[in-house]
Amino acid sequence: MKLLLSLSLLSQSSFREPTSKYWLQAQETHNFIVENLLTRYNSYRVNTTDQTNTAYEWYSASQIYADAAMIEAGDTRYVPYMNNSYAWMNNMWDMSSSIGGYYSTANIDGTGSVGDKYADDNSLTGVVYLNAYDVSTGTERVNYLNSAKACANWLIYSDQWDSIYGGGFWWSTAKESKPTQTNGLALQLFLRLYQLTGEPLYRDCAYSVRDWLMKEMFDTTTGLYIWKIDGPGVGIKHTEKFTYDNAIMIEAFLLYAQIIGDYSYITKAQALGTKMNTILWNNVYRVYLFNSISKRINPAWCGWASQAMILLYLADGNTAWLDYAQQNIDYMNLKLRNSTNNGYYAFCDIDGSGVDTRHEGVDQAWMQRVQVLLSNYR
Ligand SMILES: *[C@@H]1O[C@H](CO)[C@@H](O)[C@H](O)[C@H]1NC(C)=O
Ligand SMILES: *[C@@H]1O[C@H](CO)[C@@H](O)[C@H](O)[C@H]1NC(C)=O
Ligand SMILES: *[C@@H]1O[C@H](CO)[C@@H](O)[C@H](O)[C@H]1NC(C)=O
Image 1 (cartoon, protein in one colour):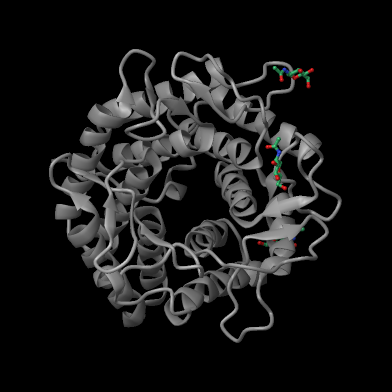
Image 2 (cartoon, rainbow, N blue to C red):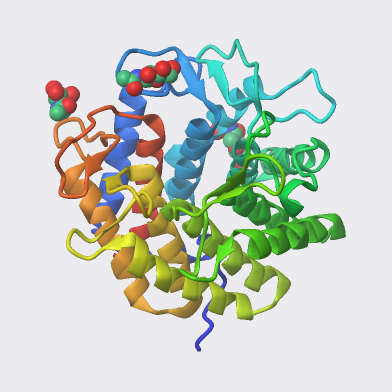
C-alpha cells in the first residue's frame, strides 16, 4: 500500500485545475449565500424560505469551514467572510459559564442564545476553527486555536461524557442519545489539538473516544458504524447506517493514522470507504444515500461523503475514491441545484423527484466546501 503525503487538504492547495467547473460553482454557491442568507450582522439566516430571523450554530460553523477552504485554495477574498462570521459566533458562546460552550440557536442580531448545547456542534466548530487557524496569521490565528481549545475544554468539563452505555459523549445537554457523529467529531478535534499542542490530555481523550466508538458503535456485520444508542439501562442500539456518520469516521481514522502514527488506521478507513461504497452508494444514480433505510438525498449529509473520499484519495492515491467524490457532487448539481439562483434544495428522492425546494444554509455551505476541495483534482 502506497502511503502518500500529508492528509491535510491544505498542503495540496498549490495545485488546482485552472478551469475546474467545481471552483466556479463553489464561487456561485457563495454568491447565493451572500445574496440570500448573509445578514447585516455577519450572521447567516437558517434558510431563505420565510425570512426567518434565526441562525443555527452548526450552519454558521459549516459556512466558516467552506470559506476556509476558499482561502486555502488561494482566494483571499473570503478572509473577511470567515473572520467576520467567527467574530459573530461569540454571540452564541455561553458567557455565564466558566467553561462556556456554544448554544445551538440565536437570533440573527446575536441576541437570544439560550437552551441546550450540542456536543456535535461544539466538536465540529473546534475542527472548523483549526482549519481557519491553518489559513490565518498573527493574532487571528492564535484566536482560532484558543477558540478550538475552548470547544474541547467544554467537551471535557461539561459532563457530556459519562459511564452510561460504557462511555461516549451525549449528543446534547438534554442527554437523550449518544451518536456516532458526535463522538467521531470529538475524536477529530482531540487528535488535531494533540497534534498542535502535544498535550497528553488531548491524546488520552482521543483514545477514550476511539475505544468507545470501536467497542460500542462498530457493526461487524456490515463493517459500518451505527447511528446511536439511547434508552434506559444498557440502552438500545439504533443500527441504521448514516452516510455522514461513516464519512466522519473515515476522516477521524485518517487523522489517527497520521497523528498517532498507527498506519493500521489507514486500512480501517479504506475498509469503511469500501463498505460505504457498497451499502450506502446507489449505483444507478451514483450518489450516497442519506442513510441505509431512507432513499432521500440531501446536499450536506450526503455531500459530506465527498470530503471523506477526497481524504482517502490523499491517503492512498487511488483515484477511484475521487470518482465517487465527483459523481456524488455531480448528482447534487443535476438534481438539487436551482440553475437560476444557484442555490441548492434541501432534499429529493433518489430518482430526483419529490424535490423539497427549501434553501437551507447548511446545504449551501457544504456544497461550497466539497466543490472547492474537489476543484484541486477535477
Ligand atoms: C426556516 O428556518 C426556521 C428556523 O428558524 C424554521 O423554523 C422554518 O421551519 C424554516 N422554514 C422552512 C420552510 O423550512
Ligand atoms: C482576518 O484575519 C487576518 C489574519 O489572519 C487579519 O489580517 C485581518 O485583519 C482579519 N480581519 C479581516 C476582516 O480580514
Ligand atoms: C429558482 O430560482 C428562481 C430565482 O430565484 C425562482 O424564481 C424559482 O422559483 C426557483 N425555482 C424553484 C423550483 O424554487
